[in-house]
Amino acid sequence: LFGPFWDTWDSINRSYVGPVDQKKLVEGAIDGMIKALGDPYSSYMSPDDLRRAREDLGGQFEGIGAVISARSSAPSGGACATLAPDCRMTVVSTIAASPAEASGLRAGDVVTAIDGASVDGLTLDEAIAKVRGKKGTPVVLTVARAGQAPFDLRIVRDTIIQTQVEARDLANASVRYIRVAAFSDNAAKDFTD
Image (cartoon, rainbow, N blue to C red):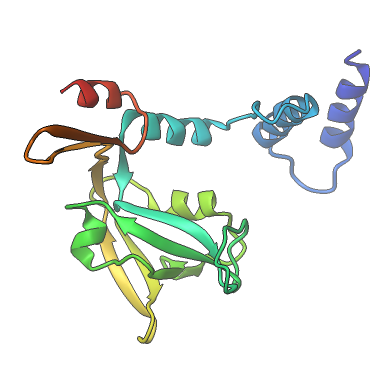
């Protein structure tokens, strides 16, 4: 059963015209096996993907504190996949008291470059990975804002703690409104509190 697999592995390592990244080859094989299941709910996560997912589940990460999406520049403005002039990296919101908010980044801003390199050709996840980084390190975003010439914003990354549960009293405190924005390790405790 594994004969063709190992024949292909050996052929690539012996005959491929350039250097072969063994780690990428293994990850690609694993990804291919899982995709072959045809199950839309199963997918392979690389070690970097897993780290980012754990950060999201933990409710905190190191970065600038902005919610970003990929939006089509078409009049409908729907979601898109690969960043390009017709698919823009758009700031949806900034997290309160975050470095992004303090720097003046605003909802609707379009990020065209990260540390001087264009975002065109990247997926949204790849671009976000370049924005995130170790606390205390800077990142420079080139921003296009309606009615202004593009400009650079230097933002120093920090630990961002996401507020995933918010509560407030309504109707003279006779009704308690609780909003759960995301589910993480902390959401159940925050809900109870």
